[in-house]
Image 1 (cartoon, rainbow, N blue to C red):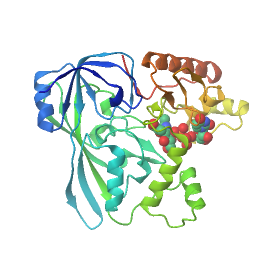
Image 2 (cartoon, rainbow, N blue to C red):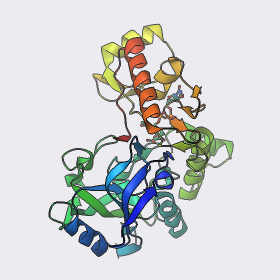
Image 3 (spheres, protein in one colour):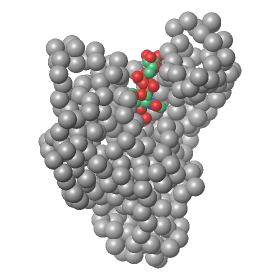
Image 4 (cartoon, protein in one colour):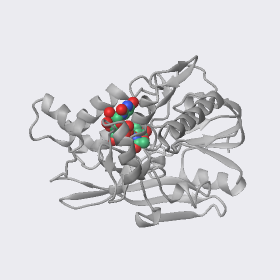
Length: 336
Ligand code: EPU
């Protein structure tokens, strides 16, 4: 294996944090990765680097999963089953699906990161989660360096959650994800308010999957910073779920508080609204801050230290606890 020494990880994480990797290896096939894992167990995995905040140099061997390729496993008149290797860029894969007229992922357009990490946090946007189309996930168990396969059920998907964030954290490396997508009679998810408004504004009454993707791209571009321009990891916090009683108390004080019903007893409130109401939206502290258009996103304007961004996150958590009695959970992986 070709191990490089002292590599800056700045271009390998969408937050653009400049930490040093003492040793770094990029693998471009399943077997190369397997051979690395046969020799080294103390590794730090890097794929798209889109859901992490690096706060220190990395002393473990950094393994960059750079395995490419898409293959069609099976198709019928209605559906296609395909397997995509972990190193494929997520949005490029979504665009490729649109070119083939494969439906199911259009609402997940423009999400940063690679295919291999999409199951870990069960990426979701505009009423769709990736778990709805995943049939199987394949990987390598780090301890045994053996191939391991997970059915959709075995992934224990939840809101921004899966088995790979819990029991199997740091135990497997995902190498490919298999999907079932539609070839015709696509099920469109346009009920998310902003998509409907966007389609209406364009005078589109019977949208195609490409129209939905274009609407999503437009909405995301208007609210979320492009990591190529401003370093970020998307939503830094999860949207918290609170009891109906707690919500009613807050609603008396803040009549305009947005909410989504989760169950008869639970309500989800947008963390972005809480952070904005606490006065943080758009605040800048030198090289880092809170995005001006979406308070849920912390940003690195240039050369911020991950530790400072983490300190800001802790300060926001404290402030939301004091103002609203709500504990905000961090959504990105903090690497210390
Ligand atoms: N809001 C504010 N101020 C803000 C941000 C949001 O008041 O600064 C309010 C909005 O006005 C709206 C509500 O909060 O009433 C929801 O906002 P939005 O539709 O932007 O969605 P979100 O709940 O803030 C979630 C996901 C995003 C995803 C969008 C669209 C989480 C943690 N985040 O954000 O995911 O794109 O919905 O589906 O669930 C990501 O995970 O990285 C991500 C960007």
